Image (cartoon, rainbow, N blue to C red; front, side, top):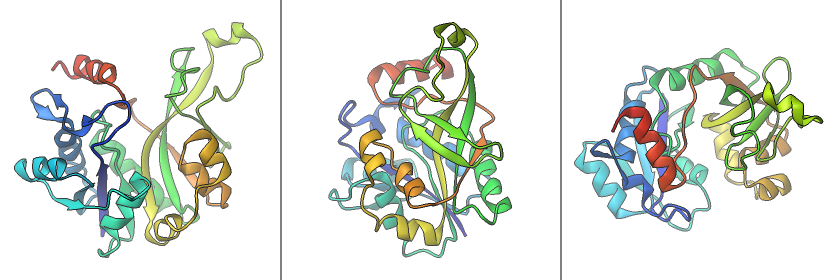
Amino acid sequence: MILGVIPARYGSTRFPGKALARLGGKPMIQRVWERAKAAKRLDRVLVATDDERIRDAVKRFGGDAVMTSPELRSGTDRVWHAAKELRAQIVINIQGDEPLLTPPMIDGLVDGLRREPEAQMATLRYRMRGPEGYEDPNVVKVVTDEKGWALYFSRSPVPAFRSSRDLRSVVWYKHIGLYAYRRDLLKQFVTWPPSALETAENLEQLRALERGVRIKVLDSPQNTIGVDTPQDLKRVEAVIGA
């Protein structure tokens, strides 16, 4: 069984209640759920939330939601809470603030993890050119080796280019926060305390890297816009023509 879980909390610091923000006449969480449900590789999709308003909204549009404790530290903890009683061998963490994700992105991630028996975890990147977003700490960058194994994730501009002239044609990779976990790794991951680099960058995937987990980074067929602020929501609205 391959399970998709969409963690969604109400109390976002920069955009409270963003999961229920209207996007093209629907709550954003419904947009994400519908795209996840259209993926061919997922056997089941759940929303994991700590708020009854989100749970009720999911039920109204016919989705499947489970309640999690508000004391859980992160979305990954909510994903494991939803998955631990089920028999899924691969679990996909689908960010609830990525309404532009597509079914092929999810299916490609699942297929990529299946092809790599050494990979315990997989995620996506998108090839960027030029300075836009490169120095934005809200845009996470990823660096890999030549076979696509993650070396580092950062909010800082990486790789660093010594000459500002290089920024006109700089090629770098944006990390897209969609994750595939093998069940045993996810079970272990939530027991590990936050690591030093994770705390410094506020990036959970660094906890896995610091523990020696091999993360396969796959190329995404398209870019996305993560919704962290009301301004991001307007950018997504412009893309979908809402």
